[in-house]
Amino acid sequence: MIEEFNIDVAGESHLTYVDEILNTISDAAKVRGTGIAKRSPGYIIQKINEGKAIIALQKGVFAGFCYIESWGHDRFVANSGLIVVDAFRGKGLAKAIKSKAFELSRKKFPAAKLFGLTTGLAVMKINSDLGYRPVTFSELTDDEMFWKGCKSCVNYDILVRTNRRHCLCTGMLYDPEKIKDEEKDKNIGVYGRWLRFKQSVFLKGNKKKESSKLSYLKRLQLKLIS
Image 1 (spheres, rainbow, N blue to C red):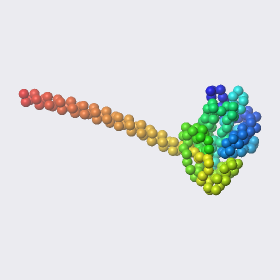
Image 2: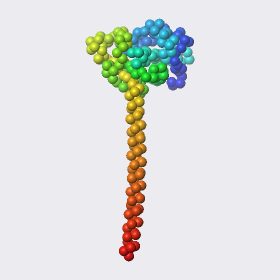
Image 3: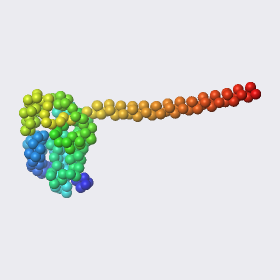
Image 4: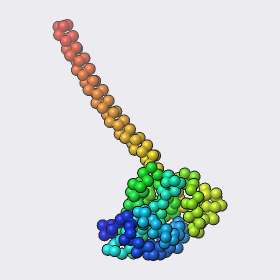
């Protein structure tokens, strides 16, 4: 079903969808009650012009959107404003858009940690599949401009009262260095299992040789006795 959509990095030709994108973001924020920061038309236009947005269309009809933000001198990157038009829900489109945004983020900012704040179980599942892990807020960016973006959320007072330690959102982080270490450990594990297998084969072969040698010596000894 996902094949019916064109999911691309947004460009100049997609600027005509800006108002529709903003209206969809606004509607989604009202339904969720949390989690989506309000953005101006100029901000969305900037993201599209910078090649930092993903748009999904079905035969020219707007279906979904997501954009990339970098924080803390590009050390942290967030895929923000993930939305899918109601008529296109249940087709795996959110996951496809998020995956495309993830690929674009890794390409543009290969050394950055990718993070997100969400209250949605579906988004948590998508993030988890991409390699994100739940973390405390202290492990996320300390860039004040990012946290100011939370002001438009109805739960911002919780964030303020807890000195930015807790909120209804769950913080999730993809750390490329940790992923490398995990892959290295996994490869070492595979190598270790292969090494143990080779050792067992070697020892088994030696035991057979020793057994054969002992058997020959016993036969020789019996011949000498007789």
